[in-house]
Image (cartoon, rainbow, N blue to C red; front, side, top):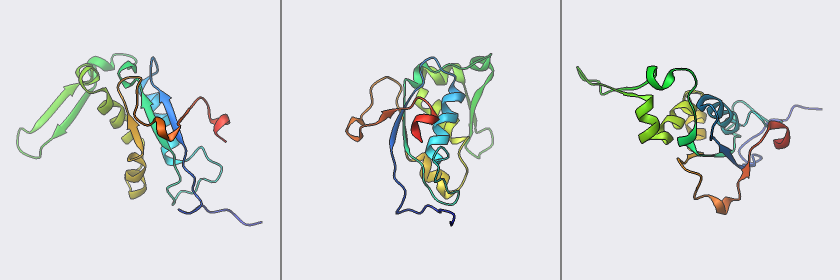
Length: 147
């Protein structure tokens, strides 16, 4: 018996919905990262992009544990002197909760071509409504039901 190696032709992609309401931001992002990479599948192959599509809803209702709302900052730098911009997560979660979720998932995905491709399959929405009903997404509950 030989080892099965997935390739682009044999990969089947499903659509999953993750509800972030009243769940920690990092825990939801970790689940999304696993689904995007395809690590939950039995035919996972590291050098092939075999992940699924992930829709994260209720990103505005995700919670940050501890004192992260006050102590954690989203920082960007323009490259120029004095070009540091920082936004407290309390403000970021009010104004752009989708960005906060995307950044959390992005930090858990490899910085490679496959990782960038996987991130393009992440769809984040602040509220409970999404625009991907035509793809017939399935609500993700546990890894046992996926296999």
